[in-house]
Amino acid sequence: MTAPMTRDRPKLKPVIAHVRGYWNRLKRGENAIPFWDDASIAALGAFADHVLLIDVFENPLRFRIGYAGRVIVERYGAPLAGKFLDEIGLHAPLDRLNAQCVDTLTRRAPTYEHEGLPENEPVMTYARAVLPLWGRGRIEMLLGAVE
Image 1 (spheres, rainbow, N blue to C red):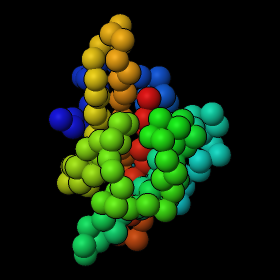
Image 2 (image 1 turned 120 degrees about the vertical axis):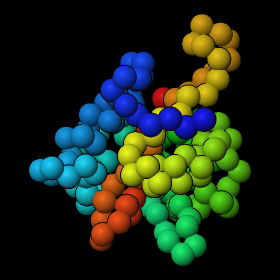
Image 3 (image 1 turned 180 degrees about the vertical axis):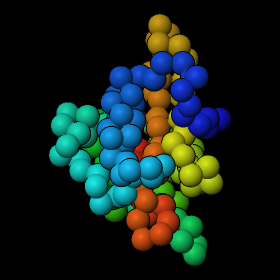
Image 4 (image 1 turned 90 degrees about the vertical axis):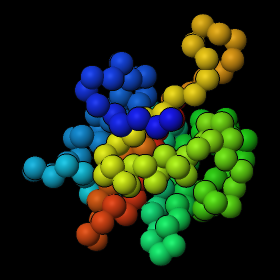
């Protein structure tokens, strides 16, 4: 289940905490959501390997991956850039990503999802955040982070 990213949540994983901090620093003045054209993959340095940029289309609502970091592509096992979420098989670490994107749009706030067993178990787990980016009067892009 997707949860909002709030201050009273347990400590976020390091990559997600870094990307969330970057997202917060992008905000202009009193705006609750940063503008998509202020986001820069290069500004994330090595963290860019764990990032997704997702374009939001309306009528019908669809999500297209504009950028997928190296670590995400390797874990997923196939190229992702330019693909719509409804055209690809969503499996770890992207399972339920379409629903999380819808949830982020609905809440107009970052969401967080964690999958798998506790880290001391032999099964690989992941955490994922999706953060909204504003543009042209609406949420036009989403910034995702996977760890």
